[in-house]
Length: 425
Image 1 (tube, rainbow, N blue to C red):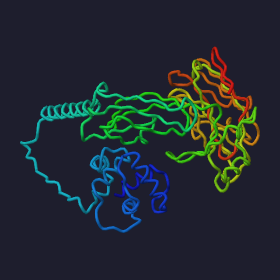
Image 2: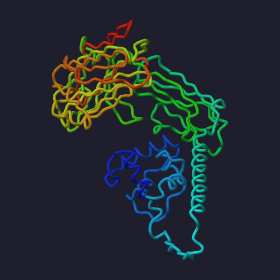
Image 3: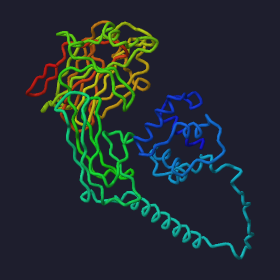
């Protein structure tokens, strides 16, 4: 159980379970039922994690649900894949059998050619075993044509937005679990009944998502879903599955500036201390023809003063494309030692490269400009080249922009231009 608990702790990143409180166990219970369809009570989870003393062993239903929460097939699959480290195979349960040595008489010593022959046989057997294992494990279990998966979006644009999934998974084996994943992150898949035909989900953030119908870990069908904003949208980020705080558009759009300031946060009783809230500003729409390998993007932005635990004043600018993304960091000059850049398949971090060009004075207006021609990208910060990169992914349409601030932030003069069209946000 120690291995299971440590993997759950690593997955959640809430710190060691010894410091979790009742609220944490309630959140974990909710996430487990969302992902596996199995409801484990708070008291059961507390017993598993040693917060409450209990002498009985957990039920197989509980163990299977916890293993599936970690993306294993079931408890048996967890044990098989963690044989060397799992506490179930403790030294007290292992019986050591001493080796038996059989002396070989000189006349019984195998000849050189016999040894070579047996070595060749062993090599062939091992090779065939590896090939057979690879072939069987990589061969899909199901034919996608035996299933259907589609969806419709309730609102044309605006958040939150519901999506109704229509599916037919009746051809799945009775023992296999059916899941729907709203996006690329299959860890957030939800269990659905194979005999049902519909499933509803709420999207709290805009973006371009690839929804998936899954049987176990096998992706059977997938299709794209775009959730658009109605112009500029400002939110205070919440935990996954929890509705964020949405600002009224009239609260944040003060032409030509889009801003979430201290007064606005105070109006909604959002504190800046000790940890400032994670504020996001979006503008995502149905743009066609401005491609990731040929475009120019320009924007000006600034962060509020370094309130609370926000000395670095890190800002992230994201260019959202269809199933692709660019993530640009900006931070105070002294904090450039811990940032990273992702650019449509290209990735680099400050531990291995010089990203000091992304250092600035975040409280002042900072100009970010990106020029990309035939996949070669130049990034400018305040008119100075900060970095150059060659994107690696196939070109696709850019559909919008997103900004992430720790606390308050503002944006202005934002536009995107392709070969034939210019979009002013």
